[in-house]
Structures are given as structure tokens and as C-alpha cells.
Amino acid sequence: MSTTESRPQINYTVPGMKTDQAGEVVTLLQDRLNALNDLALTLKHVHWNVVGPNFIAVHTMLDPQVDGVRGMVDDVAERIATLGGSPCGTPGALVAQRSWDDYSIGRNDAIAHLGALDLVYAGVIEDHRTAIEKTEELDPVTQDMLIAQAGELEQYQWFVRAHLENADGTLRSATADTEVDAAKAADR
Image 1 (cartoon, helix red, strand yellow):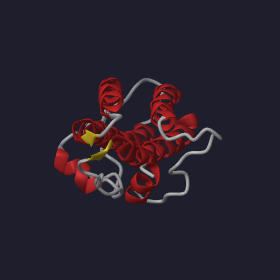
Image 2: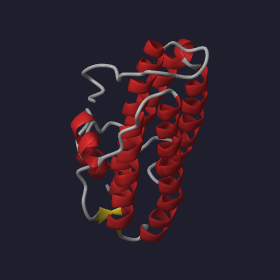
Image 3: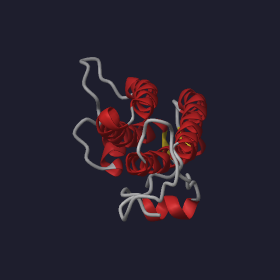
């Protein structure tokens, strides 16, 4: 099922929710599942490809973030199943359903990766906040889960941004629109 094509077939759901509402929430959650799975893989990619003087700080900072995001993946998938849906976590489905491009930075300085990763986090968090808004009336239980996840994701982004912040409080990569531009701006 593509999250952009139609709602999934829901035959049963949690008490107090209609199946069409559950289908709408499942569609939102499948998009979040794809984004979180992609984020976990991207974080590991960065973890393996950082180099330079900040290597160990960034390398060791990312593993707890990977673990936290993987926990979010599991929570989202289990919520989909609880609502009567079927979570899809295969790589092919993720690639077919996502609306974003692959992370494009390979082996690079740790700070360059963090500049690009800041944009990745910004996109995931923004989309989480949109899902939070959409679930307010539909499913407050799902909304609570997404709110908690957004808080964790924002903290992870703060950890990333702490490496990018100038003494005056500005971010080196603040004006960048692409990962490549953010990596270049951060590494100056």
C-alpha cells in the first residue's frame, strides 16, 4: 500500500474508533514508520562515515540516537497493528513510499555530517508535528505517542545543533536548503 494512494483496509480497530478513522491514522503512521526507519539507517550511515577531529564525539553520540529511533519505529509499527493495520517495514516499501531523497553525504568530516543531519532531523520533526496536529481529533492515544517522540527527536537535534552553533547563537548551516549545502556551510 502506498501512503499516497489510498487508505489501508481496516477490518477492526480499537474500541471507540471507527475503522475509517483508524485507516486515516494508520496511513499517517505508515509515513512516520518510513521516516523513522530511514532516520535510523541514516544515523548509522553517518556513524560509520564520520572522520576528523570530532570523530569520537559524534560517533559515540549517534548510537544512543539510533537506539532511541529504533524504539520509536517499534512503537509506531505496534500502534499500526493495534489499530487493525499491517505495518510495512520492508526496504522496498520504504523507498517506494517516501517523498524524500536518500541521504547523500558519504565519508566526510563529522561537522559536515552534522550540518546535513540537522536538515534531516528538521524534516522528520516537522512531519511529526503535522501528524500530531492531524491526530488531535482522530486519536489522542496516537497523538500522545507522537508528541513524546517529537520531544525526543527535538533533543537529538539539539545535540546535533550544539556542534553547529556559533558563539553568537547562530547555526553555521542555518541558511542551507540541501544536505550538501548544509554540510559545506557547517564545515567552514
